[in-house]
Amino acid sequence: MGKLSNIDQILENLEQSEILKKLILTVKKYWQDSDDQNSLSLLNIKKEANHVIENNAGLQREDIRVVYKDKIIEKKVETIPQWVKGLEQQYLYFQKLNDFPELKSILVQSGGDESVALMSFIGRSSQWQNIIRIWDKLAEHCRITQQEISSEQLNFLENMLFLYNLTLSNAKAELNSPESDDDYDFRKHTQLAGEGTKIKQVLLPALYSGAGEKIKSALVILG
Image (cartoon, rainbow, N blue to C red; front, side):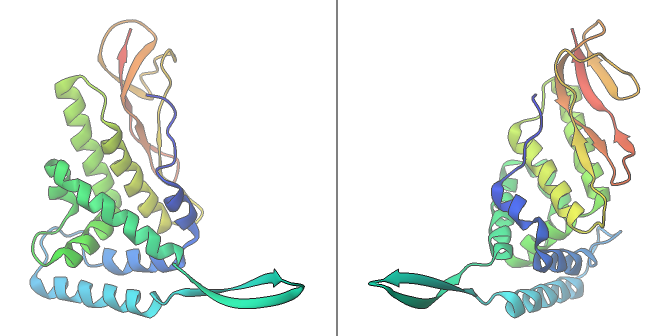
């Protein structure tokens, strides 16, 4: 596994989106520290999320000046806000969860229609305790199969960190992956198989908190 790359240019552009951050904080509070939610909370989250979207979903207008036959022509052009593109990206991740039922059970609240399920996915994905739960679930898979996680599974984890980091100020939780042939360090890595002092393969990157604390060691095979 090489160095980690950004998930998508859209997510990269979205880091400064205050609207998406507001939406995340809105939906997140309904699932904070609780896995059992009643129908009232589902209705509340749908109402609050729709309120955020409806008040900010208007198309942005940009002034474009075109020179035609020595005359400057001004025209209003409507563009889609970046935060809307971000929600579209989250919907794609939400749909891909059907291929990973073991992750879906953690990230999606049962009950309600698809819009409520999508909001619960965004809210739950931005919670630190769920990031740890997903990392543990992927680690369990690595220990059983002795294989590295797929790129799709890694993308889910990276996306969760992206959403979580939007709720932080001047801090950034992240994954940290050693390189093949790096020296094995028991303080940073967990050996699952193999022998020697060099890393042969990285199965799962290490997880670091926004404070820079190592929460989970990278899972590696030596050789």
